[in-house]
Image (cartoon, rainbow, N blue to C red; front, side):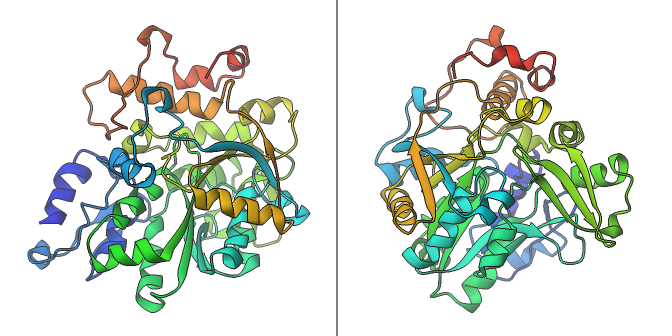
Length: 410
């Protein structure tokens, strides 16, 4: 029984990523999610699952992201030890949207948003899945499936809050199964969808044929809703029911946390100041995650500035833009199309140098690899590191110490 295996191997050892994949594939739609813990609530008789062949465990990236198997299918090989943290790379580009509206509303130049918009023309995409806000609770993250330009642009910024994201694709599968879909997500979302695409089932076939574009954004670690509600309540001293929207990277690069209330007022906290509150509200699975990027998307996106904490404290020294890692021929072709259409500008860069988000991810993961706690599997290539060089997360985001590591090699 897949649900029993899911409970034993993922839920009980606290390895649920909160991605929503199990809810997506459940044929009877029995799986719902606790809206604050972002974990499946198994409040139904599991006898209903006895004859079910729906692969809720098979698509779950929580305990096993199945990176090696997905890489074999996508690239014909697995990553090497040298590729452990960035994955198999085709090319690396700097990029930003040519639209002033998209750039101004984005976290890092709007390249991902520009590509999602252009996928509608280039790949005949009818539905784009991106992270928006809950209609009833404006401070809470919620997945949004839309083809409307305004909605896609409105969801352009990074959202540092978890939600059962992939569940939203169930409606597309049931209502418009012949429509093409593009998804922007985090490593766990991409890993789950690649696992789904390998399944020999009707839903797996749909995913192979209709989820035509995957774009991922780099993730140091995600945060439970309590991280956001804590900033609103404890830092800004606002009532949650007054909030109509939150943005995590609003304004001049790298952006600030901004809440809008029903009276139309904006309430702002500097980005670097919210990290402590976010850090207090992590899950074990996110803290032990071994993937800054899954390396399995068509295109991976990260900030052009490799240290937005520095930029938030001291001011930005580079223009708002993104770093794109092109991984598949389709990803490269979409970028070229967007450039030809005048929607995207791009230039050659490299990924060398210190990157704070990546360093936080690597150091946390390596600490956990030395522990006896359950952790999700990483790529088969493994990770080579000197335990004496490990740093704590507190040190890495301490304004008094982090700048001196800028010249360290990646």
